[in-house]
Image 1: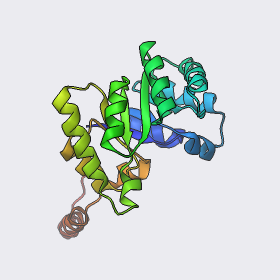
Image 2: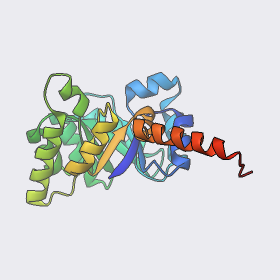
Image 3: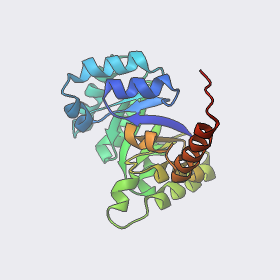
Length: 217
């Protein structure tokens, strides 16, 4: 499973990228606003750092303007993925933009039916939102599993990009089900390393080592 980091924080991206933990980046208007920077400037900096796909989101609601915004965003770098919402106009924009050879991420997916439409429209990625379904007492992982089954049934090439990741467990569950990509905030990716038994084991090793009175350096 590929890891995308869901942020516009350059320092956070750089830290994970240097460890080989970043296969791509996803951004959205909220993350850009949080960065406090110009969308084109910060997106260009991300694209220069990361060779993989970088999702940059349109903000229009009608297909014609989405297409125009997508074309403008695509000028930033060759690895830009144009992000459009899973609406009828978003699907229209997806069809046009993918027809022009551009990568498109159809986002805000909450049902298998929506995911089928995204694949039919030629989406490069579809982004089902796990955490927001969990917030409604629905199991977001069930949606990932349903999409995986349907896409495999018909050999759809659209990649499942698990989004709205809230925990380290979400990451491993998405991987087990077969999501192609998971995008998560930097802190969630870093929390994947944590386990109380690792901490306990390390504490024991260090106590035993201290008893020897030895040093490595």
